[in-house]
Amino acid sequence: MLLFCLLVVGLIGLLARAAYLQGMHNDFLQQEGEARYSRVVEMNADRGMIADRNGEVLAISSPVASVYVDPKILKITPVQLDQLVRLLEMDKGEVEKRIYREHGRFVYLKRQIVPEVAERIDALNIPGIALKTEFKRYYPEGEGAAHVVGFTDINDKGQEGVERGWNDVLTGKLGSRRVIKDNKGRIVEAVEKIRPPKPGQDVILSLDRRIQHIAHRELKSAVAVHRAKAGSIVVLDAQTGEILALTNFPVYNPNARSSITSNRIRNRALIDTFEPGSTLKPFPIATAIEIGHVNPDTVLQTSPGTFKVGRSTIRDVSNKGLLSVAEVIQVSSNVGTVKIALSLKPQTMWEMYSNVGFGMPIGTGFPGEANGSLRPYGQWRPIEQATMSFGHGISVSLMQLARAYTIFTTGGELKPVSLKKQVFPVMGQRVISSETAHAVSQMLEMATQTEGTAPLAQVNGYRVAGKTGTAHKLVDGKYAKNRYISSFVGYAPVSRPRLIIAVMLDEPSAGKYFGGAVAAPVFSQVMAGSLRILNVPHDALPANNGVNFSLASTADREG
Figure 1 (spheres, one colour):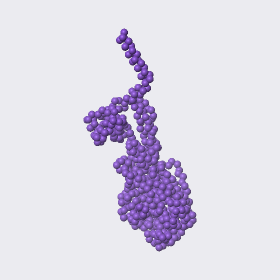
Figure 2 (figure 1 turned 90 degrees about the horizontal axis):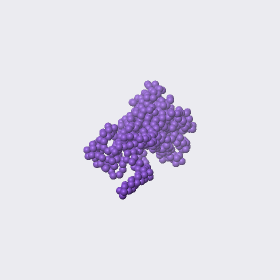
Figure 3 (figure 1 turned 60 degrees about the vertical axis):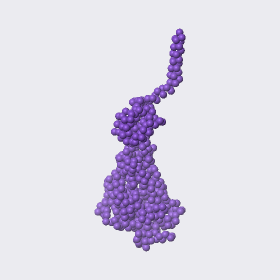
Figure 4 (figure 1 turned 60 degrees about the horizontal axis):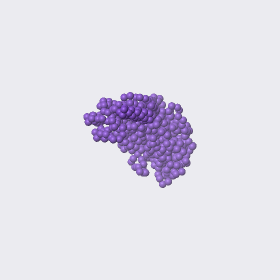
Protein backbone atom coordinates (compact mmCIF):
# COMPACT_ATOMS: atom_id res chain seq x y z
CA MET A 1 0.00 0.00 0.00
CA LEU A 2 2.87 2.37 0.82
CA LEU A 3 4.46 1.72 -2.57
CA PHE A 4 1.11 2.19 -4.30
CA CYS A 5 0.57 5.52 -2.53
CA LEU A 6 4.02 6.70 -3.53
CA LEU A 7 3.35 5.80 -7.17
CA VAL A 8 0.00 7.62 -7.11
CA VAL A 9 1.57 10.74 -5.60
CA GLY A 10 4.34 10.66 -8.21
CA LEU A 11 1.84 10.23 -11.01
CA ILE A 12 -0.26 13.13 -9.70
CA GLY A 13 2.92 15.26 -9.52
CA LEU A 14 3.83 14.42 -13.10
CA LEU A 15 0.31 15.21 -14.31
CA ALA A 16 0.36 18.52 -12.43
CA ARG A 17 3.76 19.40 -13.83
CA ALA A 18 2.66 18.51 -17.37
CA ALA A 19 -0.51 20.58 -16.98
CA TYR A 20 1.53 23.49 -15.62
CA LEU A 21 4.08 23.42 -18.44
CA GLN A 22 1.58 22.89 -21.24
CA GLY A 23 -1.01 25.26 -19.87
CA MET A 24 0.88 28.08 -18.21
CA HIS A 25 4.17 28.05 -20.22
CA ASN A 26 3.04 26.64 -23.51
CA ASP A 27 3.89 29.75 -25.59
CA PHE A 28 7.33 30.11 -24.01
CA LEU A 29 8.27 26.47 -24.58
CA GLN A 30 6.96 26.52 -28.11
CA GLN A 31 9.09 29.56 -28.88
CA GLU A 32 12.13 27.88 -27.36
CA GLY A 33 11.55 24.83 -29.48
CA GLU A 34 11.02 26.76 -32.68
CA ALA A 35 14.13 28.82 -31.97
CA ARG A 36 16.19 25.69 -32.48
CA TYR A 37 14.98 25.11 -36.03
CA SER A 38 12.80 28.04 -37.14
CA ARG A 39 14.23 31.38 -38.31
CA VAL A 40 12.88 34.58 -39.80
CA VAL A 41 15.29 35.66 -42.53
CA GLU A 42 15.38 38.78 -44.67
CA MET A 43 14.56 38.64 -48.36
CA ASN A 44 16.71 41.01 -50.40
CA ALA A 45 15.00 43.42 -52.77
CA ASP A 46 16.39 44.15 -56.21
CA ARG A 47 17.93 47.61 -56.58
CA GLY A 48 16.47 49.53 -59.49
CA MET A 49 18.30 49.62 -62.80
CA ILE A 50 19.88 52.78 -64.22
CA ALA A 51 19.56 53.15 -67.99
CA ASP A 52 20.25 55.78 -70.64
CA ARG A 53 17.52 57.52 -72.64
CA ASN A 54 17.38 54.61 -75.12
CA GLY A 55 17.10 51.91 -72.47
CA GLU A 56 20.77 50.86 -72.56
CA VAL A 57 21.81 49.56 -69.14
CA LEU A 58 24.27 51.73 -67.19
CA ALA A 59 23.92 50.01 -63.79
CA ILE A 60 22.31 46.70 -62.85
CA SER A 61 22.36 44.31 -59.89
CA SER A 62 23.25 40.64 -60.22
CA PRO A 63 22.81 37.97 -57.50
CA VAL A 64 25.95 36.80 -55.71
CA ALA A 65 26.65 34.73 -52.61
CA SER A 66 28.16 35.77 -49.30
CA VAL A 67 29.61 33.28 -46.81
CA TYR A 68 28.74 33.56 -43.12
CA VAL A 69 29.22 31.49 -39.97
CA ASP A 70 27.15 30.77 -36.87
CA PRO A 71 29.90 30.18 -34.25
CA LYS A 72 27.44 28.56 -31.82
CA ILE A 73 26.78 25.54 -34.04
CA LEU A 74 30.06 25.46 -35.98
CA LYS A 75 31.70 22.05 -36.30
CA ILE A 76 34.79 22.13 -38.50
CA THR A 77 37.81 19.84 -38.85
CA PRO A 78 41.35 21.09 -39.47
CA VAL A 79 41.19 19.72 -43.02
CA GLN A 80 37.92 21.53 -43.72
CA LEU A 81 39.36 24.72 -42.25
CA ASP A 82 42.33 24.58 -44.65
CA GLN A 83 40.00 23.95 -47.59
CA LEU A 84 37.77 26.86 -46.56
CA VAL A 85 40.73 29.24 -46.22
CA ARG A 86 41.97 28.34 -49.70
CA LEU A 87 38.57 28.87 -51.30
CA LEU A 88 38.04 32.20 -49.55
CA GLU A 89 41.60 33.35 -50.38
CA MET A 90 41.88 34.83 -46.90
CA ASP A 91 44.46 34.74 -44.13
CA LYS A 92 43.96 31.67 -41.93
CA GLY A 93 44.33 33.70 -38.76
CA GLU A 94 41.59 36.10 -39.86
CA VAL A 95 39.23 33.23 -40.65
CA GLU A 96 39.88 31.57 -37.26
CA LYS A 97 39.30 34.89 -35.51
CA ARG A 98 35.84 35.15 -37.06
CA ILE A 99 34.66 31.55 -36.74
CA TYR A 100 35.72 31.12 -33.12
CA ARG A 101 34.04 34.25 -31.80
CA GLU A 102 32.37 33.87 -28.40
CA HIS A 103 29.57 36.34 -29.08
CA GLY A 104 27.09 36.57 -31.93
CA ARG A 105 25.28 34.08 -34.11
CA PHE A 106 26.01 35.68 -37.48
CA VAL A 107 29.47 36.65 -38.77
CA TYR A 108 30.38 37.31 -42.41
CA LEU A 109 33.47 35.48 -43.64
CA LYS A 110 33.51 36.95 -47.14
CA ARG A 111 30.93 38.83 -49.15
CA GLN A 112 30.02 38.82 -52.82
CA ILE A 113 32.00 35.85 -54.06
CA VAL A 114 31.67 34.27 -57.49
CA PRO A 115 29.06 31.48 -57.87
CA GLU A 116 31.63 28.78 -58.64
CA VAL A 117 33.47 29.36 -55.37
CA ALA A 118 30.19 29.52 -53.46
CA GLU A 119 29.17 26.10 -54.79
CA ARG A 120 32.50 24.55 -53.73
CA ILE A 121 32.17 26.00 -50.22
CA ASP A 122 28.62 24.68 -49.94
CA ALA A 123 29.86 21.22 -51.02
CA LEU A 124 32.14 21.08 -47.96
CA ASN A 125 28.99 20.55 -45.79
CA ILE A 126 30.43 22.28 -42.73
CA PRO A 127 27.80 22.71 -39.97
CA GLY A 128 27.54 26.42 -39.11
CA ILE A 129 28.92 27.64 -42.46
CA ALA A 130 26.19 28.88 -44.82
CA LEU A 131 25.57 31.08 -47.85
CA LYS A 132 23.42 34.16 -48.17
CA THR A 133 22.17 35.58 -51.47
CA GLU A 134 22.99 39.27 -51.99
CA PHE A 135 23.21 41.59 -54.98
CA LYS A 136 26.29 43.12 -56.52
CA ARG A 137 26.15 46.23 -58.68
CA TYR A 138 27.63 45.99 -62.17
CA TYR A 139 28.39 48.91 -64.49
CA PRO A 140 28.57 47.88 -68.17
CA GLU A 141 30.09 51.21 -69.30
CA GLY A 142 32.87 51.08 -66.70
CA GLU A 143 34.71 54.39 -66.49
CA GLY A 144 32.80 55.77 -69.48
CA ALA A 145 29.80 56.92 -67.43
CA ALA A 146 31.29 56.67 -63.94
CA HIS A 147 31.01 60.34 -62.96
CA VAL A 148 27.29 60.41 -63.73
CA VAL A 149 26.16 56.98 -62.57
CA GLY A 150 28.43 56.75 -59.50
CA PHE A 151 28.66 53.56 -57.44
CA THR A 152 27.32 51.74 -54.36
CA ASP A 153 29.10 50.32 -51.33
CA ILE A 154 29.13 46.63 -50.42
CA ASN A 155 25.77 47.06 -48.66
CA ASP A 156 24.24 48.33 -51.93
CA LYS A 157 23.90 51.92 -50.70
CA GLY A 158 24.67 54.71 -53.18
CA GLN A 159 27.94 56.53 -52.52
CA GLU A 160 28.35 58.84 -55.53
CA GLY A 161 26.50 60.17 -58.56
CA VAL A 162 22.99 59.06 -59.47
CA GLU A 163 23.40 56.02 -57.21
CA ARG A 164 23.60 58.41 -54.27
CA GLY A 165 21.34 61.23 -55.45
CA TRP A 166 18.47 58.85 -56.26
CA ASN A 167 19.29 56.20 -53.64
CA ASP A 168 15.82 56.31 -52.05
CA VAL A 169 14.18 55.69 -55.42
CA LEU A 170 16.56 52.92 -56.48
CA THR A 171 16.55 51.09 -53.13
CA GLY A 172 13.86 48.47 -52.68
CA LYS A 173 12.24 47.44 -49.40
CA LEU A 174 13.42 44.23 -47.74
CA GLY A 175 11.01 41.35 -47.34
CA SER A 176 11.04 38.52 -44.79
CA ARG A 177 10.14 34.83 -44.63
CA ARG A 178 10.05 32.06 -42.02
CA VAL A 179 12.25 29.05 -42.74
CA ILE A 180 13.31 25.77 -41.11
CA LYS A 181 17.04 25.13 -40.77
CA ASP A 182 18.90 21.90 -40.11
CA ASN A 183 21.66 21.41 -37.56
CA LYS A 184 24.20 22.71 -40.08
CA GLY A 185 22.43 26.04 -40.39
CA ARG A 186 21.14 25.30 -43.89
CA ILE A 187 17.61 26.15 -44.97
CA VAL A 188 15.67 22.97 -45.62
CA GLU A 189 12.17 24.37 -45.98
CA ALA A 190 10.49 27.75 -46.48
CA VAL A 191 7.43 27.82 -44.19
CA GLU A 192 5.79 31.13 -45.04
CA LYS A 193 6.44 34.51 -46.65
CA ILE A 194 5.83 37.14 -43.98
CA ARG A 195 6.44 40.23 -46.11
CA PRO A 196 7.30 40.13 -49.83
CA PRO A 197 10.25 42.28 -50.95
CA LYS A 198 9.51 45.42 -52.96
CA PRO A 199 12.02 46.05 -55.75
CA GLY A 200 13.46 49.54 -56.30
CA GLN A 201 12.38 51.75 -59.18
CA ASP A 202 14.39 52.06 -62.37
CA VAL A 203 15.89 55.47 -63.20
CA ILE A 204 16.02 56.50 -66.86
CA LEU A 205 18.67 59.14 -67.45
CA SER A 206 18.88 61.76 -70.18
CA LEU A 207 22.30 60.41 -71.20
CA ASP A 208 22.82 58.95 -74.65
CA ARG A 209 25.35 56.14 -74.25
CA ARG A 210 26.65 56.63 -77.81
CA ILE A 211 27.35 60.34 -77.35
CA GLN A 212 28.76 59.64 -73.89
CA HIS A 213 31.25 57.21 -75.44
CA ILE A 214 32.44 59.77 -78.01
CA ALA A 215 32.77 62.55 -75.42
CA HIS A 216 34.72 60.29 -73.06
CA ARG A 217 37.06 59.10 -75.81
CA GLU A 218 37.85 62.57 -77.17
CA LEU A 219 38.34 64.18 -73.76
CA LYS A 220 40.65 61.37 -72.69
CA SER A 221 42.72 61.87 -75.83
CA ALA A 222 42.89 65.66 -75.40
CA VAL A 223 43.99 65.43 -71.76
CA ALA A 224 46.79 63.07 -72.81
CA VAL A 225 47.90 65.07 -75.87
CA HIS A 226 48.00 68.42 -74.04
CA ARG A 227 49.28 66.88 -70.80
CA ALA A 228 46.47 68.58 -68.88
CA LYS A 229 45.98 68.20 -65.15
CA ALA A 230 42.28 67.52 -65.62
CA GLY A 231 39.42 68.03 -68.05
CA SER A 232 35.65 68.05 -68.37
CA ILE A 233 33.07 68.02 -71.13
CA VAL A 234 29.29 68.50 -71.13
CA VAL A 235 26.86 67.86 -73.99
CA LEU A 236 23.37 69.36 -73.66
CA ASP A 237 20.27 69.13 -75.79
CA ALA A 238 20.10 72.73 -77.00
CA GLN A 239 16.29 72.85 -76.81
CA THR A 240 15.41 70.86 -73.69
CA GLY A 241 18.49 71.23 -71.47
CA GLU A 242 18.81 67.44 -71.07
CA ILE A 243 22.34 66.23 -70.32
CA LEU A 244 23.25 63.89 -73.18
CA ALA A 245 26.85 63.34 -72.07
CA LEU A 246 29.08 64.32 -69.18
CA THR A 247 32.56 63.08 -68.37
CA ASN A 248 35.72 64.14 -66.57
CA PHE A 249 39.37 63.24 -66.15
CA PRO A 250 40.90 61.86 -63.99
CA VAL A 251 38.34 59.05 -63.97
CA TYR A 252 37.74 55.74 -62.18
CA ASN A 253 36.18 52.37 -62.92
CA PRO A 254 33.26 51.61 -60.55
CA ASN A 255 33.73 47.89 -61.25
CA ALA A 256 37.31 48.05 -59.89
CA ARG A 257 37.12 49.50 -56.40
CA SER A 258 40.90 49.87 -56.21
CA SER A 259 40.68 52.72 -58.74
CA ILE A 260 38.32 54.78 -56.57
CA THR A 261 40.10 57.72 -54.91
CA SER A 262 38.84 61.10 -53.73
CA ASN A 263 40.60 62.85 -56.61
CA ARG A 264 39.13 60.58 -59.27
CA ILE A 265 35.50 60.45 -58.14
CA ARG A 266 34.94 64.25 -58.29
CA ASN A 267 32.44 65.20 -60.95
CA ARG A 268 34.33 68.35 -61.89
CA ALA A 269 31.77 69.53 -64.44
CA LEU A 270 29.18 69.91 -61.67
CA ILE A 271 31.03 70.46 -58.41
CA ASP A 272 34.23 72.30 -59.39
CA THR A 273 34.24 75.98 -60.32
CA PHE A 274 36.67 78.05 -62.37
CA GLU A 275 37.01 81.50 -63.91
CA PRO A 276 35.62 81.02 -67.42
CA GLY A 277 37.53 83.75 -69.23
CA SER A 278 36.31 85.00 -72.60
CA THR A 279 33.44 82.52 -72.83
CA LEU A 280 31.51 85.09 -70.76
CA LYS A 281 31.93 87.96 -73.25
CA PRO A 282 28.65 87.27 -75.12
CA PHE A 283 26.58 88.01 -72.00
CA PRO A 284 27.46 91.67 -71.27
CA ILE A 285 27.37 92.32 -75.01
CA ALA A 286 23.92 90.71 -75.25
CA THR A 287 22.81 92.92 -72.35
CA ALA A 288 24.02 96.08 -74.10
CA ILE A 289 22.23 95.08 -77.32
CA GLU A 290 19.04 94.21 -75.42
CA ILE A 291 18.78 97.67 -73.78
CA GLY A 292 19.78 99.50 -76.97
CA HIS A 293 23.23 100.77 -75.99
CA VAL A 294 24.84 99.18 -79.03
CA ASN A 295 24.03 97.07 -82.06
CA PRO A 296 26.20 94.54 -83.91
CA ASP A 297 27.48 97.25 -86.28
CA THR A 298 28.40 99.82 -83.62
CA VAL A 299 32.10 100.72 -84.06
CA LEU A 300 34.47 100.89 -81.09
CA GLN A 301 38.03 102.16 -80.93
CA THR A 302 40.28 99.63 -79.25
CA SER A 303 43.61 101.28 -80.08
CA PRO A 304 46.29 101.15 -78.85
CA GLY A 305 45.28 97.72 -77.55
CA THR A 306 45.12 98.87 -73.93
CA PHE A 307 42.50 100.61 -71.79
CA LYS A 308 42.93 102.16 -68.34
CA VAL A 309 40.35 101.43 -65.66
CA GLY A 310 41.44 103.34 -62.55
CA ARG A 311 45.03 102.36 -61.92
CA SER A 312 44.70 99.05 -63.80
CA THR A 313 45.28 98.40 -67.49
CA ILE A 314 43.14 96.09 -69.65
CA ARG A 315 45.07 94.59 -72.57
CA ASP A 316 44.42 92.85 -75.86
CA VAL A 317 47.05 90.50 -77.28
CA SER A 318 47.56 93.05 -80.07
CA ASN A 319 46.29 96.43 -81.26
CA LYS A 320 43.08 95.61 -83.11
CA GLY A 321 42.09 99.20 -83.96
CA LEU A 322 38.50 99.96 -84.93
CA LEU A 323 36.15 97.05 -84.32
CA SER A 324 32.43 96.59 -84.68
CA VAL A 325 30.63 94.97 -81.76
CA ALA A 326 30.37 91.77 -83.84
CA GLU A 327 34.13 91.84 -84.42
CA VAL A 328 34.75 92.31 -80.69
CA ILE A 329 33.29 88.82 -80.23
CA GLN A 330 34.95 87.45 -83.36
CA VAL A 331 38.51 88.39 -82.34
CA SER A 332 37.83 88.28 -78.57
CA SER A 333 38.83 91.84 -77.72
CA ASN A 334 39.12 92.50 -73.99
CA VAL A 335 39.27 96.27 -74.55
CA GLY A 336 36.13 96.32 -76.69
CA THR A 337 34.23 94.12 -74.23
CA VAL A 338 35.23 96.26 -71.25
CA LYS A 339 34.15 99.49 -72.98
CA ILE A 340 30.72 97.96 -73.64
CA ALA A 341 30.44 96.52 -70.12
CA LEU A 342 31.31 99.82 -68.41
CA SER A 343 28.50 101.52 -70.33
CA LEU A 344 26.10 99.33 -68.31
CA LYS A 345 24.97 99.92 -64.76
CA PRO A 346 26.48 97.29 -62.43
CA GLN A 347 22.97 96.16 -61.48
CA THR A 348 22.03 95.61 -65.13
CA MET A 349 25.08 93.46 -65.79
CA TRP A 350 24.60 91.57 -62.52
CA GLU A 351 20.98 90.82 -63.43
CA MET A 352 22.08 89.26 -66.72
CA TYR A 353 24.62 87.02 -64.98
CA SER A 354 22.08 86.10 -62.31
CA ASN A 355 19.31 85.45 -64.84
CA VAL A 356 21.44 82.92 -66.73
CA GLY A 357 22.08 81.02 -63.49
CA PHE A 358 25.53 82.13 -62.32
CA GLY A 359 25.92 82.06 -58.54
CA MET A 360 22.94 79.73 -58.12
CA PRO A 361 22.42 75.94 -57.84
CA ILE A 362 21.66 74.20 -61.13
CA GLY A 363 19.01 71.91 -59.68
CA THR A 364 19.87 68.58 -61.33
CA GLY A 365 19.66 66.70 -58.02
CA PHE A 366 23.29 65.61 -58.30
CA PRO A 367 25.04 65.53 -54.90
CA GLY A 368 27.42 68.43 -54.25
CA GLU A 369 26.42 70.76 -57.08
CA ALA A 370 28.41 74.00 -56.99
CA ASN A 371 26.74 77.41 -56.90
CA GLY A 372 29.76 79.31 -58.17
CA SER A 373 30.51 82.84 -57.07
CA LEU A 374 28.77 86.05 -58.18
CA ARG A 375 29.21 88.89 -55.70
CA PRO A 376 26.43 91.47 -55.12
CA TYR A 377 26.65 94.35 -57.60
CA GLY A 378 26.71 96.88 -54.78
CA GLN A 379 30.24 95.69 -53.94
CA TRP A 380 31.61 96.02 -57.48
CA ARG A 381 34.37 98.48 -58.24
CA PRO A 382 34.79 99.61 -61.89
CA ILE A 383 37.82 97.34 -62.38
CA GLU A 384 35.84 94.36 -61.05
CA GLN A 385 32.96 95.05 -63.41
CA ALA A 386 35.51 95.31 -66.21
CA THR A 387 37.25 92.01 -65.46
CA MET A 388 33.97 90.17 -64.90
CA SER A 389 32.94 91.12 -68.44
CA PHE A 390 35.68 88.83 -69.76
CA GLY A 391 35.35 86.11 -67.16
CA HIS A 392 37.69 87.02 -64.30
CA GLY A 393 36.50 87.69 -60.76
CA ILE A 394 33.54 85.35 -61.20
CA SER A 395 33.47 81.57 -60.88
CA VAL A 396 31.11 79.08 -62.51
CA SER A 397 30.88 75.35 -63.06
CA LEU A 398 31.15 73.99 -66.59
CA MET A 399 27.53 72.87 -66.39
CA GLN A 400 26.40 76.39 -65.44
CA LEU A 401 28.34 77.77 -68.39
CA ALA A 402 26.83 75.29 -70.85
CA ARG A 403 23.35 75.98 -69.54
CA ALA A 404 23.79 79.75 -69.88
CA TYR A 405 24.32 79.33 -73.63
CA THR A 406 20.78 77.95 -74.01
CA ILE A 407 19.60 81.57 -74.24
CA PHE A 408 21.33 81.76 -77.65
CA THR A 409 19.97 78.42 -78.91
CA THR A 410 16.32 78.85 -77.87
CA GLY A 411 15.67 82.41 -78.96
CA GLY A 412 16.34 83.95 -75.56
CA GLU A 413 15.06 81.36 -73.04
CA LEU A 414 17.15 79.80 -70.26
CA LYS A 415 16.33 76.08 -70.06
CA PRO A 416 16.52 74.00 -66.86
CA VAL A 417 19.16 71.29 -66.89
CA SER A 418 18.06 67.70 -66.32
CA LEU A 419 19.86 64.39 -65.68
CA LYS A 420 16.61 62.47 -66.22
CA LYS A 421 14.95 61.92 -69.55
CA GLN A 422 12.21 64.48 -70.20
CA VAL A 423 8.92 63.16 -71.54
CA PHE A 424 7.08 66.46 -71.95
CA PRO A 425 8.20 69.83 -73.41
CA VAL A 426 10.37 71.84 -71.04
CA MET A 427 9.43 75.43 -70.24
CA GLY A 428 12.22 77.99 -70.03
CA GLN A 429 12.65 81.44 -68.51
CA ARG A 430 12.97 84.32 -70.97
CA VAL A 431 16.16 86.31 -70.47
CA ILE A 432 16.61 88.23 -73.74
CA SER A 433 14.54 88.81 -76.86
CA SER A 434 14.76 86.45 -79.81
CA GLU A 435 16.21 89.32 -81.89
CA THR A 436 19.08 89.79 -79.45
CA ALA A 437 19.68 86.04 -79.25
CA HIS A 438 19.84 85.84 -83.06
CA ALA A 439 22.25 88.79 -83.26
CA VAL A 440 24.65 87.31 -80.70
CA SER A 441 24.39 83.90 -82.38
CA GLN A 442 25.61 85.45 -85.64
CA MET A 443 28.58 86.98 -83.77
CA LEU A 444 29.43 83.63 -82.19
CA GLU A 445 29.32 82.04 -85.63
CA MET A 446 31.86 84.61 -86.83
CA ALA A 447 34.18 83.51 -84.01
CA THR A 448 34.44 80.03 -85.58
CA GLN A 449 35.35 81.33 -89.02
CA THR A 450 38.83 81.88 -90.46
CA GLU A 451 39.28 85.35 -88.94
CA GLY A 452 37.90 84.31 -85.55
CA THR A 453 39.55 82.70 -82.57
CA ALA A 454 38.09 79.21 -83.09
CA PRO A 455 38.35 77.97 -86.70
CA LEU A 456 39.31 74.56 -85.27
CA ALA A 457 35.76 74.30 -83.87
CA GLN A 458 34.30 73.98 -87.37
CA VAL A 459 32.34 70.85 -88.25
CA ASN A 460 32.18 69.71 -91.84
CA GLY A 461 28.71 70.32 -93.29
CA TYR A 462 27.35 72.34 -90.35
CA ARG A 463 27.26 75.97 -89.28
CA VAL A 464 28.88 76.26 -85.86
CA ALA A 465 28.80 79.05 -83.26
CA GLY A 466 30.82 79.35 -80.09
CA LYS A 467 33.31 81.21 -77.95
CA THR A 468 36.78 80.42 -76.71
CA GLY A 469 38.11 81.10 -73.24
CA THR A 470 41.66 81.27 -71.92
CA ALA A 471 42.00 82.33 -68.29
CA HIS A 472 44.98 82.53 -65.97
CA LYS A 473 44.40 80.09 -63.13
CA LEU A 474 43.91 81.30 -59.58
CA VAL A 475 46.41 79.68 -57.23
CA ASP A 476 46.38 80.68 -53.54
CA GLY A 477 44.44 83.84 -54.36
CA LYS A 478 46.83 84.99 -57.12
CA TYR A 479 46.83 84.51 -60.88
CA ALA A 480 49.56 82.04 -61.86
CA LYS A 481 51.65 83.32 -64.74
CA ASN A 482 51.96 80.12 -66.75
CA ARG A 483 48.95 78.09 -65.62
CA TYR A 484 45.73 78.33 -67.61
CA ILE A 485 42.16 77.11 -67.87
CA SER A 486 41.35 76.57 -71.55
CA SER A 487 37.73 76.29 -72.60
CA PHE A 488 35.27 76.43 -75.46
CA VAL A 489 31.47 76.57 -75.48
CA GLY A 490 29.52 76.27 -78.70
CA TYR A 491 26.52 74.83 -80.50
CA ALA A 492 25.38 73.51 -83.88
CA PRO A 493 23.76 73.61 -86.32
CA VAL A 494 23.31 77.39 -86.08
CA SER A 495 20.20 77.37 -88.29
CA ARG A 496 18.41 75.12 -85.80
CA PRO A 497 20.61 74.39 -82.75
CA ARG A 498 20.52 70.77 -81.63
CA LEU A 499 23.47 70.41 -79.25
CA ILE A 500 25.50 72.60 -76.90
CA ILE A 501 28.96 71.35 -75.98
CA ALA A 502 31.23 72.86 -73.32
CA VAL A 503 34.85 71.73 -72.97
CA MET A 504 37.39 72.66 -70.29
CA LEU A 505 41.03 71.60 -69.89
CA ASP A 506 42.83 72.41 -66.66
CA GLU A 507 46.49 73.40 -67.01
CA PRO A 508 47.42 72.12 -70.48
CA SER A 509 51.22 71.92 -70.45
CA ALA A 510 52.30 70.61 -73.85
CA GLY A 511 52.95 74.07 -75.33
CA LYS A 512 49.46 75.16 -76.43
CA TYR A 513 47.02 76.69 -73.99
CA PHE A 514 44.61 78.97 -75.92
CA GLY A 515 41.03 77.69 -75.86
CA GLY A 516 40.88 77.87 -79.66
CA ALA A 517 43.83 75.51 -80.01
CA VAL A 518 43.18 73.17 -77.07
CA ALA A 519 39.44 72.95 -76.36
CA ALA A 520 37.89 73.84 -79.74
CA PRO A 521 39.18 70.71 -81.55
CA VAL A 522 37.60 68.50 -78.86
CA PHE A 523 34.31 70.31 -79.43
CA SER A 524 34.61 69.73 -83.19
CA GLN A 525 35.20 65.99 -82.89
CA VAL A 526 32.44 65.39 -80.34
CA MET A 527 29.96 67.60 -82.20
CA ALA A 528 30.66 65.90 -85.53
CA GLY A 529 30.16 62.41 -84.09
CA SER A 530 27.08 63.37 -82.09
CA LEU A 531 25.28 65.08 -84.98
CA ARG A 532 25.99 62.04 -87.13
CA ILE A 533 24.54 59.71 -84.46
CA LEU A 534 21.41 61.85 -84.15
CA ASN A 535 21.10 62.06 -87.93
CA VAL A 536 20.86 65.88 -87.86
CA PRO A 537 20.57 67.36 -91.38
CA HIS A 538 23.43 69.49 -92.71
CA ASP A 539 22.87 73.24 -92.84
CA ALA A 540 26.04 74.21 -94.76
CA LEU A 541 27.88 72.99 -97.82
CA PRO A 542 30.81 70.80 -96.76
CA ALA A 543 33.15 72.71 -99.06
CA ASN A 544 32.24 75.98 -97.33
CA ASN A 545 32.56 74.76 -93.80
CA GLY A 546 35.27 72.10 -93.77
CA VAL A 547 37.86 72.06 -91.04
CA ASN A 548 41.25 73.31 -92.20
CA PHE A 549 43.81 72.26 -89.63
CA SER A 550 46.38 74.60 -91.20
CA LEU A 551 44.49 77.36 -89.38
CA ALA A 552 45.98 76.37 -86.02
CA SER A 553 48.00 79.58 -85.86
CA THR A 554 44.79 81.60 -86.27
CA ALA A 555 43.37 79.96 -83.15
CA ASP A 556 46.36 81.21 -81.18
CA ARG A 557 45.37 84.86 -81.65
CA GLU A 558 42.93 84.82 -78.76
CA GLY A 559 43.29 87.21 -75.83
